[in-house]
Image (cartoon, rainbow, N blue to C red; front, side):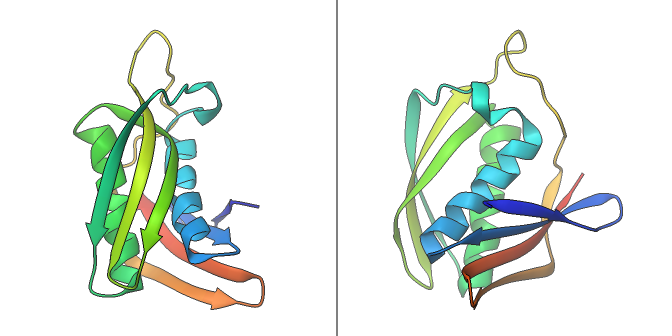
Length: 137
């Protein structure tokens, strides 16, 4: 399972999962955009490179999700897929496939206002990696 919703009042609590750290970041991106729109209908014919930095893995996840959310809120891009090319504790580079928003084709499921630091955590468990985060709606 790429992600699951966790119980959180008036916001979306998310746990993204993956066998690798790269997969956790990719699945966190998927969860964000799957809540915004039906990612299954996106073509993802356009791509952009994306680089984010952070003070640690939690900060890196926060900055990653904030940058991805800005692509929607600031640029009108709906992300189909994010492919992490390289990741370290402090830096991530990825290729992001997207469509530009078209009102006649794309339904917006939820308006995500922000990603919060509340309960943000990136860590390992017996199944691989996970990231817990909350989206403000």
